[in-house]
Image (tube, rainbow, N blue to C red; front, top):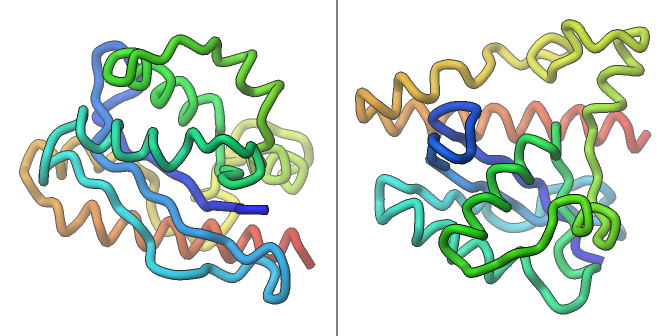
Length: 172
């Protein structure tokens, strides 16, 4: 089985008009050291090539023949998948319905665990509210517009570490 932390950073909330700035993923051990990150965090950066190139590169990783080779582990899969599927349609000639995909391939979303930990309240159940995460992603479009890419990378690394700490706590 291939479990992978997966996250995106975007310039907004509308996949039809906003763009994906980064796609980041890293393998998660699902065997001996359950929940441990394996290898390097891959960060595909739009500013080093283009949105089209990073989407096409990730498409090759994501769309494996065996559904168990890339199992995304994320927070708020609907946001991530809506963006990815819109861009897959645009750049990869891919026309699979989001709901068909979600019912045919495995994925894990910690969003529901955050809601349960928050007394079944959706309000204030984000990773930034429920853990030691020091900020949310609202600054990403500003940093992107100011070409402060190093701040985006720092945020991505902090977010992955916070996510993985929470994920490991769930596994215990």
